[in-house]
Image (cartoon, rainbow over all chains, first blue to last red; front, side, top):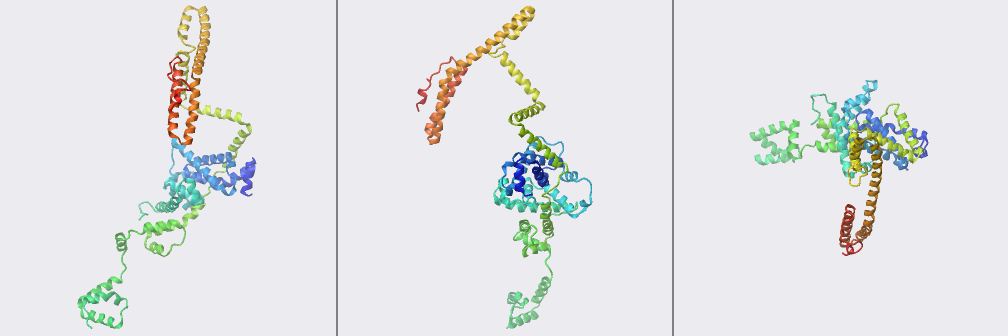
Length: 190
Length: 297
């Protein structure tokens, strides 16, 4: 079903349309939440909060073409609010990135041994080494595919700054991944 | 034509590259055969030209001239991830293992990042979201008043759960007690002495004192209301002035007349001071008369 029709049905209070919308976008919202918080359970709560906000503001987006940027904006705002609240009341224990990843993906499976799974693991750990703003730009640009103009608007930064930061952040991430790939004791950087 | 060493040295590079005409080429060869110093230099330079400069030499030259090229190379790599490097960049990558390693990561990075745009939560996630939004829907259908009651109830539960709540409640209770028993118009003023006397005098006296206390409380409230009413009436013209001056201040600001605005602001301040004086002491003399001299600029 087309997104425009799903949204229309959702606004009319159709529970089945809402379920379809949730199922269609939940993995994307959860992935966004995971870039902001390390703990999988916390990310799950954050993703749920995003959908509650979305449900309360379904009238806020009338154009289906604008839905994804709008959803990402809601997710980002929810994440920022969540991090502010958490700053005021920190969790009992903060997980290192690698540990958090292990919690989210417990036990080795055949897939874990594939090269792609290994690279995903490295990139997830590399992302944790970036500054908050660089990680956000990577998430918005390279993961979610938002145009630079949209990112500049969302982050309230000049377009030129976002452009330069975007390429720099990518190289920083590649550098971090290289360092993680290098066995301990060997130097990866020049 | 004989050739001296200086001339031979000038032509050396051109001769080595075969760019000289036959006569000049022959003159260079003749000089080389006749001059042992130039022959030694030629042997040395020929040996040097045939060996590759080592990496340290390149790095040293670049450090002394343009600086290390890796910074620029990485900028270019970041600008177009996954794209084939141009000739200059490719030449750098051939000689720089660090940048080549970075380029290799940047080659597969976009695919992995795009793949990470989605991550499936656990199977119960959808159900939990639908349950949460069903609650929102139910509250919407329930109407505004029950929703407000529900919110207030939730707010109260949050307040009560806070550790500071006991302190705050004690503070509020102490303030209320002070207002009821200690202020000049407090309805319960003197209650403690009366209660003590009544207890000492016996049960009949307790009953009389209780009646007296209720009457005193009623009288106290009446006095309080009368005093507030008197102040309110006396301050009425000054309040009217204050309203008028506030309106004039707004108009002056709108017109950009800053001098008039300053005067109206001063008049407004005087109005507020008069109102405060009356509320503090209803019999206090007020120098200014409402609606008269304060309007003068």
